Length: 315
Image (cartoon, rainbow, N blue to C red):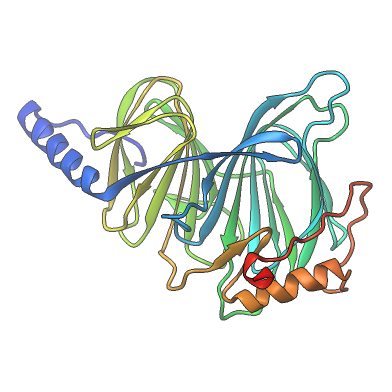
């Protein structure tokens, strides 16, 4: 079963733990999140980074908040902006977030729910804290869409996801398959996302797919892999090749596990766009600023954002 630590004789257990630690140390890298301001609240951005652009098809990872808003504070307010060739994946840990898009969808996402917007060739949306909500805490990710498929824009909402407890941890599977559980979330690439909340300090062997590379973001608390300690907003990257991942966690540790098959190309990630080629981004930015019908319009009072000129185009 997922997450259970195997009990062995002391000598065997010690030898296995040492071997696991040495193997993990050779496969793990640490990445620090950068601090950003998004829509008026602080976020910790773990992906993309200069030395690690993607983990599987996951190409963007923001830890939003946790932020509490006082009287008169509006919270998160992100005006209308476009996307191409990606899915936006919002996992709500606490609080609420209002989504509106140019397909006409309007939805408030709440605790333990997923919003999944597929941009395809082009879509626009807004994100904001609903009036009266005083807290925002979420993980927002982007997923690169396959470069050789024509995918229509769409929006999906998931409020019923696989949830279970095992040993000292509570699991919520946000997408993909983990152990014996499978989520209903729409996918175009083989990926996985799991929210794991540990109630007590423990050693755990997480089941992994040898074909997947993985990232573990510490939302709160701490974890240790192969002797390397990871604190809040630090990302542990684990290379593909193993069918289990031994970790040590502190009490009340909360992590987000993501993984997937490594991409066979390096996508260009700039502003709110993802594409195989720079020319695709040049065209998208120009068409957005010219109010092309490609992206549609969002029914929102928030200000429409302007696409800046790509740095390579400016040169």
